[in-house]
Image (cartoon, rainbow, N blue to C red; front, side, top):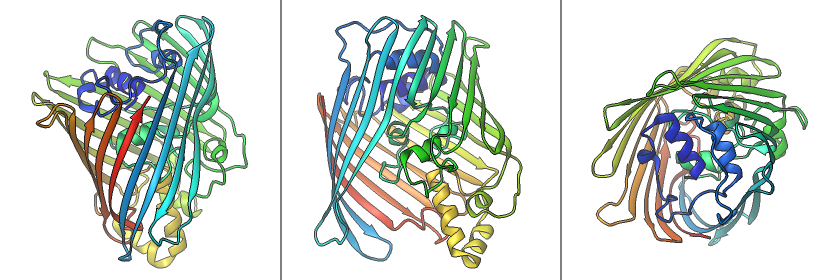
Length: 438
């Protein structure tokens, strides 16, 4: 988890930091994000909304991670396959002058099949962020370029994270940390104003490619994935009391009515954080949007309600109930699969690419246990259940060192053939990986 992600969640949920801190923490799991630009960005993104001074000049402006993973998979048709994935991630961020900064973040993946697999090798290069910042004053910053605007109080499903659609590929691990970190930014202009008790952020993202709806699995380029339509967003927050500071969002894109959202978290006692994330507006259902069916536009809402309980033994437990008014029930999915398999496949792919809940309701539970018997040995896992549909399970055991991590990961997903997890070709996988941090 990056330092920016930890900072934003901490400000939003007050006590959620101990819940989400994972391998890449100050103990040596990758260190902090590239200093400089992240600090300016986080100042306006954080719900604490306190302008932060630039880091000392001695701070390292870049970060390099090298990872190699061996994976063996069992497929739904009964076959087995293996692959090796080499990943190189580089980040750079620095204030070049007191007023101007540059930030660049990219990831390169090389996939090589093992054994007699007929799959060919492939390379994937992802430019996550590439933007320049201008600090007009200590409390006002303007960013221009490919930026990442991540929102949401929830952990498993984030309906207010409007720019998530199309930003994450299938090659990214399914855990929430990876989905938030390894994602494609949007080319746009972002202005951020902060004050002692609140903040206001405006983001404008123009259409720069052939028209394509966000989250369209048929997008032909990274630019079409993120800039296929004109989009804009306003994000505001204001502290109402020492323990309550909600966040409000207004989002719009060409061809769709404005969408509204709210994030809120509350500390209950010393060990429980409850959170609510809500989004609503006039929009089409997931199936209608993916299949081009008759316009069924209506006012629909999506939400995530949950809580995290942190125990004294460094164990955190999270339970989250999810809903999506644009999803479909089991009968609708089965009917679509039988009547039009092509349209059904398009709808399932769209739900995955857009990171939308395909069913009306879902349940997410997660556990994170740090220092399990041995210092720097962490055990974590989650279960995502689309109620009435499929389920996905993920477990990781990780040993952290000063500049190196070793992890063992297990993934299983299944369910009815019409569900997103039941339709995945891979049913089970085991992966061993090593990560070197520089």
